[in-house]
Amino acid sequence: MIILLALGLYMMIASPNLVKKVIGLNIFQSAIFLFFISTAYVEDGSIPVVYPEASGMTHVSPLPHVIVLTAIVVGVALTAVALALIIRIYSEYGTLNIREIEEVNQAEH
Image (cartoon, rainbow, N blue to C red; front, side, top):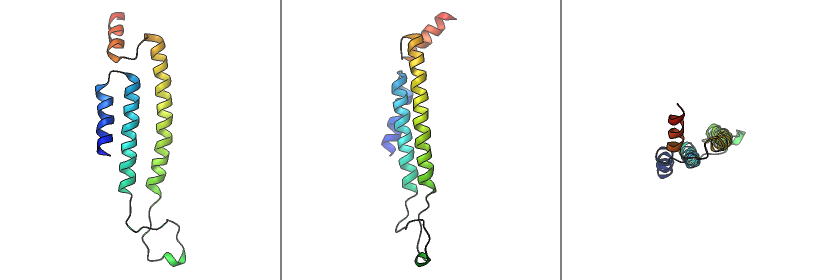
């Protein structure tokens, strides 16, 4: 998890390519999902459905799993919007390199 976190963060910071930054963001998100689910682990936990025989048992909270599922959906939507914006940027500037885009913007102003 820590390796994925570091790899995703490095890709977002070091890469000048916009698509690689989005891939780094997705790797970073996956590491966060793994962290969140791993912290929700309960030793000898049972399903969160309470029935009469389970009065003294430890139950697992379904909340972290639901939050991660929601975050996955939001992450997919964020990736789709980011890639749509990258397509627009490429059609406008003809490149996906941030440094070249900044040079074009500097030359226009």
